[in-house]
Length: 540
Image (cartoon, rainbow, N blue to C red; front, side, top):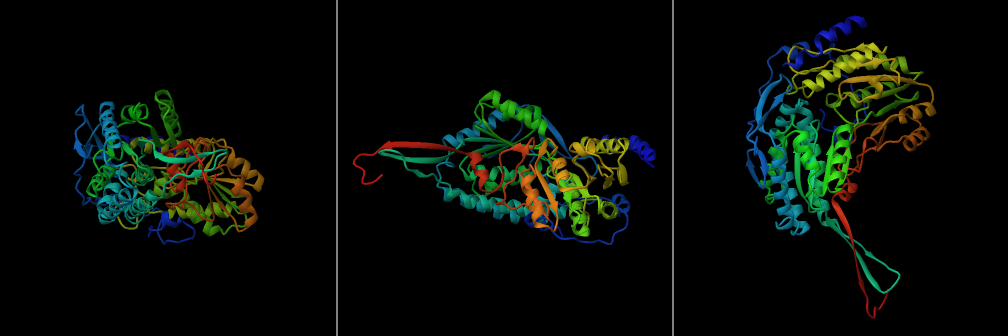
């Protein structure tokens, strides 16, 4: 069986290179569900004619100083429909010269424009109006996101776009609550601190959650009074251009938010190394994060926030409700086509319940509905592009060759686009690539453990430390693990609970700094101490 699948992968893996979820982010998943769906339920869905999106692509230029303009070079690049590999639109390709123009606009907006000089209440009102417009245009925004990214439309329309509006309302609420302190001193001095905006913030957003990462970064930056230059992922530039145009409709002054589509080695590198950018925030791979940090350090030592890769453990203890744990582990891994930095991609299961868990995990994966993400009921769309598609299939081949048991999946689906079968491996060992490296795809690796001490050590034996899931009915076990696991987020009997107020970020090589919540505001503020002498003070 393994040899057949290896041969199949070798022949198929690179062929395509030429060619109600409404509560997921508000409360995550903490309950089981069942669906009576036949194996994969995908063949017919993939062979049927794909749905033609109803939205028009009107914004494909660079957005600088409130105006859509062509790239200085005149170059464009195609953004593709991952369902087919066909071109959706040709988008202006920004490079260093365009970054210079965008930074100059942001600098002028900060130094001379009205944004940082507005009252915080006025800034918040613009952000609230923007959130209202996001809700008004929910369907168009979600359609662009699904078309450009491949994620299920129901996920985009019912979860991600509403969450974007929620995030901007959250940060709008913070805008007029940012203030310094009065500090007592050992002597006749009046001491106060001022919390000041940093200035121009550069922000590089990824392709897996373009809109949410836009909100995670732009929201706190604007609440603090900064101006922004965004470099979108080359795979998914359309939604950021659309929503930023809405931001100007809400009253955002020109130059406050500038959007430059382009590639990492050109536009991204220019932004990270720009001498007039005081802050850079990046979400993406750990290797690229190292490059961003190096460019920031070698230029002007700008402040850096990094949200990077992960290999998150999902730990199922022997006392867990297995049906519940299977559903949550499935969600933790396969959500968003597995293209999630905090995916529960190392599923550790206690040896006493391991066999039962594997059989049920296999059955759940075989019921997963893969197909055109615009169709109702589809749980999994295509991977983002041919490169990621080929990388995932290469990892699957590695898992087979290293001796893991392929329980289900392992191949592409259909003949068009970048669809991958939901894949489950059992008998996975820690030293296998599929257990150690970030796959970023629909591949579940199930490992066996014997004791709590053992699984803690193995879970922590990773260069990553972004998140973890713990499934147990024992509160003492939960408390032991939440303190022992070296990660930025621990979900207990739930997973992927993302609220606007909950901070998110990693330990170790999963990055540094936190996004969302009150902690994210410190990324975009400077603290200034002001000291003046007191004369004849009534009190000290």
